[in-house]
Image 1 (cartoon, rainbow, N blue to C red):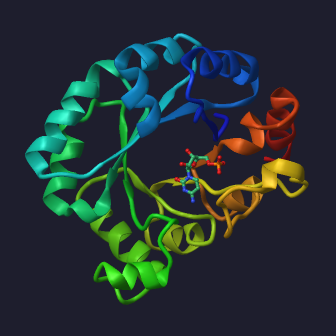
Image 2: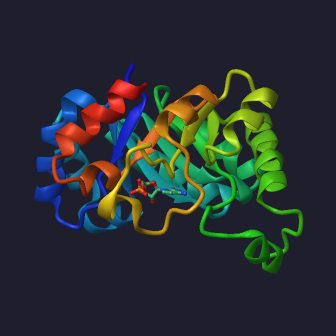
Length: 227
Ligand code: C5P
């Protein structure tokens, strides 16, 4: 299976679908985020699913267990291959989310958002920094019966050591030859797709390096060739 998932973070559904069709031979699936889901809902997900690859619904659900379980049931019909929830929602929330998910859906826990640095984490009551928090929440997600977690390429090797059979989703990736606008944006602590794979990532999430490339097919193919 191709571990590469393309993040379709485009505001227009027709543009997202066109990009999906273009690169479909060189990626393993499509990641649809909260923005896409709020804008296009189930209809939009169906539209992308028709392209014919697995769907990763990156909704980062976080609420009381009953509400998250009900939300998982509501997206069941979409048959997503992967859904995200926040591991900081706690063990009961994760257990109930997993129990409510479809049999073929992998439920993965978001550990520490990479938009938060150690100072930000301290300000919300997490004084030990991101590294500690990722390992702590990975352990809790494992105990709660989740399939895996989301973490950065810098943490995935350590998480893999403590959770051998886990399913790990790694975003924040940049090809080694990345240049021009592709390297801009908010990503700071990046690794290459190959390095993340070697460190134990199960799924590699790539967005702008493909979506914003002059030739998205060539960009996707080039990344695929490194794996
Ligand atoms: O930066 P890029 O466009 O490749 O990001 C792809 C996807 O991964 C986006 O949907 C973004 O929200 C997500 N992401 C993330 N954590 C990061 C970097 C990106 O969840 N550290």
